[in-house]
Length: 255
Image (cartoon, rainbow, N blue to C red; front, top):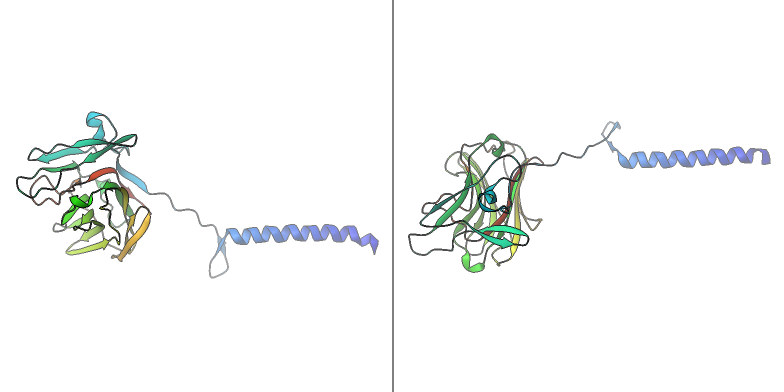
């Protein structure tokens, strides 16, 4: 019997190694219903098509740091001036104060339209960092938008009502798809807000937490020839003027 012990030890060790390899392989692969195995690669990251940090001196504050050349241009009315304020090691943009009596100061930051700012029916996301005091809210304030709800298609991020809840909107045709966050951002603190469309869902994130989600048509497509505007619709009356401080604005296409 002793002469078989070395062979048994080798065989036992080989079986243990084989079992370990099989367990690792099973844990690392995904099986289809037919039992065939395949590796699932990680999806590619979203492609940032526009980003604004407002950190450069002078006119370079309006540059597109994504490298895609979507330089902003301040468009103002009634004496408004684009004001850069200090934030940490960089800058942010302060928009005009609320106004109860015309003529009111109006300010938007705008870049021309290009194909890469039109996501079509692809997954995409967009967002910004905002600071808004509770005494600076209004009926509705646009943070970021491309297109108009009454003219074909649109994507938009806004802050709604006196309570200051942010919302995301997608429009195609006559239907507006809106998701309103459960939380307010009107507390004079910095908050990150993100709108994310993926397939048949539109979600809003506040400080990286999901705060609302609605269903949208999977084939909904946003393509228009309008500029990308930050801080309002235009420099004219009833422009849904943003009255807070804005930083780190971005648009990205992809999952």
